[in-house]
Image (tube, rainbow, N blue to C red; front, top):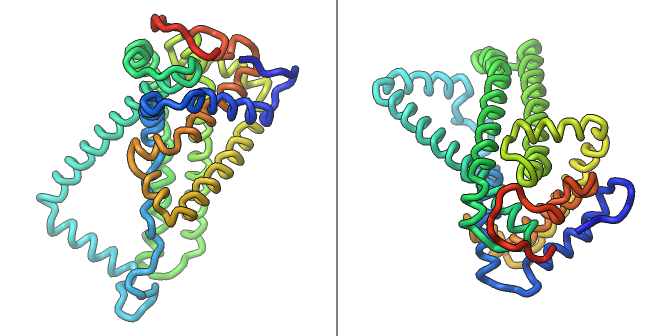
Length: 325
């Protein structure tokens, strides 16, 4: 599949991606095929979709902030500190155990999603519905991507840690005095702004890795670092193009979110409940997942045939004939 035109466009791949999504999922429609592709899409998106708390900002029994009888921030702080000291013997081991479980679960999710990204890309690019073959074929690719994401996450935590310390140092004096202190407010705002900028930077790294580095790995090499080196050489002279891509992708995401919200409202939130279910939600929203994966691949294909996953054969041999290309 080729995109016409000598220049790179963020709008041109939209219609082509929509047509490819219809070809993969509806021509012809096959429920088993839909469920298989949906499973790989669910694996690829693990950790990216969080279930809505649905009312976290709702009122609690009609009591507003500042109601007579509500504990002050200082009282809450002192109560929490006293509780920790009084239950230190069992609270610390429990907290350590919970932390170990949470970290282990997080690592498992990142590892599965790293493997799943190659499986989902394979099915979309080859117009296939397969789980076993790409799971084994892209094992080395997925493990390399997992290690890269793990190192990036650790680096992000280390970079953010001083800003969290500043947040604490700025907040504690105001909690104790129960008043705003100009210097402390500036510290809190500065730390919050720093954390926001760091979060944006690491979100961009994750986005570029998912949309462009993973296809390079799928096409040529299993090493994430080597793929990043190749992509960085492409990125440097085209920073403006890729920045425009990210902004346009955000616009498309907002548009898709509005459509999903409208469907949920029109069905009296029944569809919204179904969308929130693990795996089944991905199955119901599979056209959205396939469209966005196709869009990023088709945009990348404009940089040359060496980046066109719809034309090239994948790096590992899966003993299957590509269909629909």
